[in-house]
Image (cartoon, rainbow, N blue to C red; front, side, top):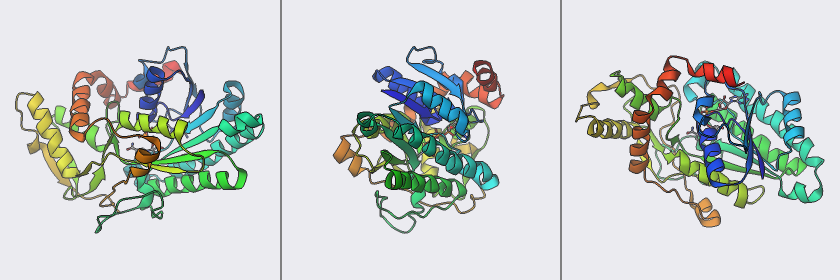
Length: 348
Ligand code: NAD
């Protein structure tokens, strides 16, 4: 297949591309605007591969997208490009509306017009896979319920509201125009190459720098963590085996309170670093506005219908992640000092 992947310079997109180059024969066009979250250094291991190419494109730019579709001729689109950090959505929601809603709309329209001109056999096999989040379902506080694919949408933040909007647009393009779409909603990811503004890499890198480990409120928020390489495998299963028009929830059966995640990081890091006490760096800070207390995914549909299950436990994945950050200080130090942008500028 020829796969057009948006947001491939981000955390999950780069993991997906590394997975696809290593484990499949597909050819990939990575389209990314290279915002602060895009980092071409995450793709250095595969960037000269003959089945990989990159174009710097904003998904709101219809003309540039049309040119990319007509020259690359994709068999499928995997759409990951998004503004993804809830805290940034609280201080600057405009970019979330623009990329997550207007950008998804623009990509859907360009995909639809391209798809309508394909021969009928290729029309049938074409896929538009929209990658979304469990945050669209809102807060599971005061219940032991899990999110299922039919849970009503109740987003809380500008981020989750913009992702919910994009999910609705994708369903409308399926129903109104027949575009062969599939949606996946995943829980919190962690793993190598995650931008150190998100909880797990922030805690690891702050601990290694001897800086405070800021925990929102009392750290009672519960998230369901999934190792990013397990997510990449799930995405490929959804693309290749999922039924058109369906939604698949993806999760790791790993409900954990944030404070427990942070103390586990402190302890695992301490074991690797001569028994150092990192717990003393934990600092409780004012909670995020509108912070959802609990997310938890019922992933039984993708397990039953597509045969996917996660390969690693949370402890195994966290150990691998901590070791990766210990082994690759140059990757994250270049984010803190801004030098990763030189690679982005040089390659584009
Ligand atoms: P990320 O912020 O690490 O990467 C996003 C990528 O999109 C970056 O490379 C960025 O440059 C690119 N981008 C942003 N705006 C763009 C635009 N207008 N045009 C083209 N590219 C643009 O995000 P991530 O964590 O890799 O998440 C990827 C997708 O998965 C998102 O859609 C997100 O909502 C979803 N998701 C993330 C998680 C998670 O825990 N990280 C969980 C579930 C779902």
